Length: 367
Image 1 (cartoon, rainbow, N blue to C red):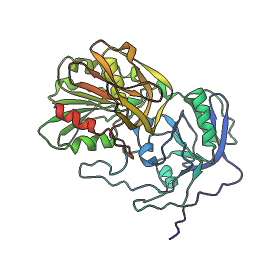
Image 2 (cartoon, helix red, strand yellow):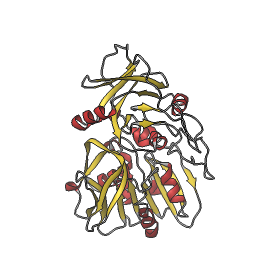
Image 3 (cartoon, rainbow, N blue to C red):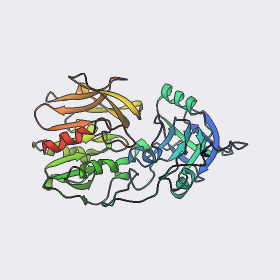
Image 4 (cartoon, rainbow, N blue to C red):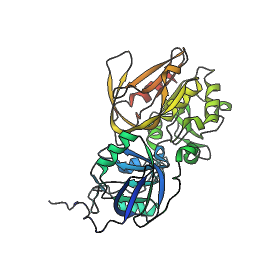
């Protein structure tokens, strides 16, 4: 059986462009919603998982370039939810990227779970896209110069002026829930601090038979009763999350288990007195090798972050737990005596890999 999933034929002439802050332009063809967009341009090297990536709150404020050459060939699933009211597939309830940049867009899609095209989905959420871009060249520019601000505008546009920098805004406050929500049932209660939590983190906790109480990022959870504390992933600069750090610092005076992922790793480090810094172009892929320190164990991980922990500033009671084998940056920390630990990568990753999902079991055992 022949499946017609050929990429969309290139139109002529090109009608839209991506303009970087250094003046470089990448021309292409418009798809999705027709509008201009400013953001921080970053790249993702994953071959699959664009529905999950686009709905990942950690991409808030960013223009995402996907390096894999063909996107859209398996369409987009529907919006159905599970028995807990959580999306069956997506990582949140909406697309968080400012815009999407790809090389080749497959207008015709084929997959048993597809309900619509990527173009239709982007239009419904008012997200612009551009295809026909040399994403290999764009990625090389970003690797040489680091993550850059960019603007997507019509090719004829003469719009000038500064590009809005999303890192100046508290992106965590933008994507966090605004009220407390409870999921699941169990003898143990976990408070999940929502800094932009991915849905699969909720699934991984609920599936381990605990009650999960999801609270806003700046909520004072120290006034609540709980058996364990979970700090979620999230977008942007951890230095702007001072309230979460203050509450976390208070919780660390006790001995109840604390587990942080991604932004959670950075906030735990800052609560412990360490510093964080911005990476040149961040880690955004499905195949980052990470080693557990003190062992020969190396794991394949999924990552999405633009900031990292400076382990040289860690207090003597803390130590690194994981290290990135590509560039030596920190991938997690732990307290030497208390049950506090974290991972910079995503052990709950969808669309994978799930090599490190055992960290959820480690957290639950500590409860």
